[in-house]
Image (cartoon, rainbow, N blue to C red; front, side, top):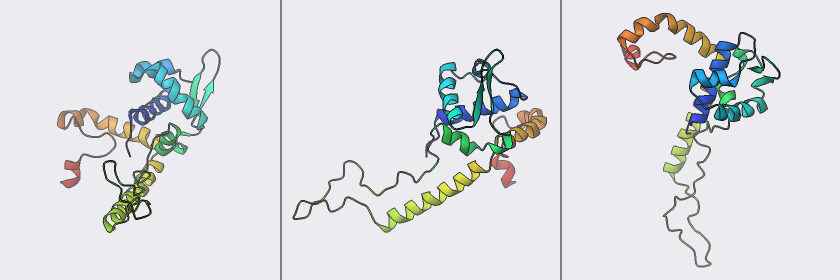
Length: 180
């Protein structure tokens, strides 16, 4: 799994839309200026989000985009899937030897080691499949509403936290706080 800027920008833009809509359409130009994301790039992302039925477009004066469902019904997984992010770390594990490995042939010229099927390969594949299940569950159970509430909860603590730890996560407590 590699979460690219496409996925991060899509989630950020959707949060911006959630924060600033109040039931009214939000123009992409506004999101672009607030989030410092290219308007052209946002247009591409929102085309995919609209196709994925996460947002609806509103035409005309005062038009823009609104959420197609309640913020608690749109998960981070929904957003990432709409924009085509790979959120399965085991999706590409198929056991094909890496490039640079000489493929051995039998006496008939058939490939012998075209698939890796060792204990190490199977344990690794199983591990990353399990990681994928955990990641999918986490992304599926975190909604835009959850993130919005977390931000509101943490904004009250933001002034105090900025003095103590400028790099602390707004969504999860820092590792130091967990271990203490």
